[in-house]
Image (tube, rainbow, N blue to C red):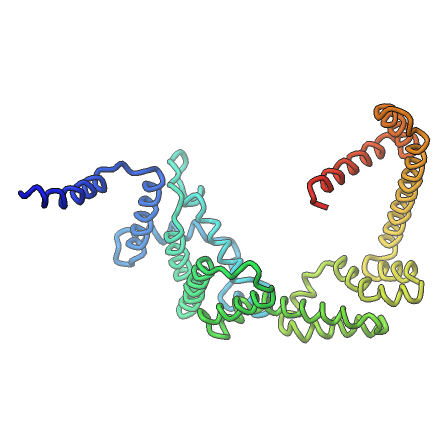
Length: 355
């Protein structure tokens, strides 16, 4: 062979040999194993496969729970915001972590390697197909596949960091409609989108309604929320903690209470409304204790400033000793130590431009 031709061919031959015989890294081995697992799972998912029965049984043990929802229950709960289909999907996915569940592995047997993302999806689809009758199972699988496509697209797409939140949310909403028709998008994302829209409308209302009479303001707030949430309103009301509802009413009435100067009495009345008479009394007692503690700290800080002026000619160590003695005398040992820790933490925040 001509030497010049050899010079052209030899590098290519060397590259091929290196590709064939270069040892795999641990990451490459793991990736190859995960791909092999997914291929085997896809083959086992074929009803004609000799492994199909075992494959189905493994998935049943892996994903089944007692009292699982029927298809109609899933759809109704998703429609009214009492259940998130995305959260249910992720609950299934968590069971793929670490491979087949420990309950599936015989005692003393070696646990299989971690399950790949693709294998997990194959097993979930098979489980849904077995768990629910046709055509309901195909509806769930279609929702599942469309969500996988949407999730993959969102992982690969990045909006600029300075994109305003309103534009970011609007983009996400439009992106979802590329993978779901309106009805399915409402089923999967409707609750989340309605809550966001309601929050925006309510924030605007609160900002512009400070002069309204408090009773009318409270009523209007919840009327707006009900209209914005629609079918989801009942689910929000059912899951909303009493303390959140109380805080909301306090916020809505605060402007009027400030104008009328009856904040203490109004606050106590609202506490009785939401928590009962006894709980309201305990809350009032806590308020008094907090106020007394604040007064003690105010008194100490005034005395500390006076002491600093009177001991300006002492050394730093002597001033610190006298300050510690004053703090302990006025606040007590435990509260004095807690106060010192708070001051050190606040100084750390200031020194590092965190406050």
